[in-house]
Length: 234
Ligand code: 6GU
Image 1 (cartoon, protein in one colour):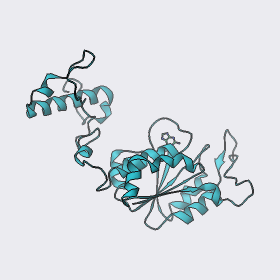
Image 2: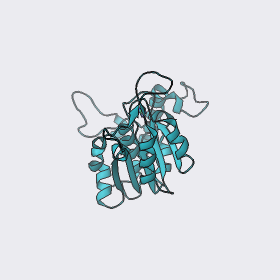
Image 3: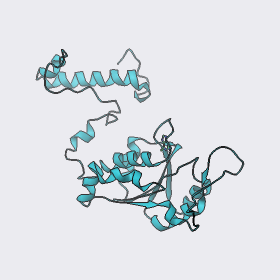
Image 4: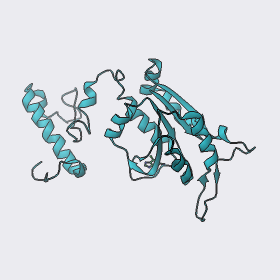
């Protein structure tokens, strides 16, 4: 997979050289490049923003640098991902779908957003997805792009050491939150480990974990429970 990130803060993407994506780049599974949006300006001040038509607070990113940057970086095969709090909620299903792509281009906006014509034009040439990480506001798309890239790259075949840990986690095949986990010592600061986990009875362990996952999901994320599930039945 190839990933390009366009941003006015390339240094924000420095963590991509570390940890999981860093290892994937060493093995040749992944190529990541960052691009400074200001390199696609032509004025002496390298201007990327201007005041909004219609008035209002803040600044809007100008379309011309974005148009030139995407022309330079995008390919016929790519998906352009635009992180924005106004986007469609990003889910594990999206991460799995994007993990099957050859080329992702992240367009990281700042200020009050990017001139709408950039996306309106891009959709005529490439696949474009405006995505949100949730109902909160970040200063720009960079941190969101980092999160999305990590969610996608860890799913690339041959990337994780232990593929089983991909299937038995929160938002896994059963769509429930993860059950609580424990390791040694069996007693720590006066707190023990649930007896069933020390019993060696695999069937009872599996049933306990399922019940814990359902209870935790009912408490924290009732929206994830299958339709018709009630609080009492979990
Ligand atoms: Cl994807 N971008 C920004 N700027 N803020 C966000 C977000 C994305 N998701 C939640 N807040």
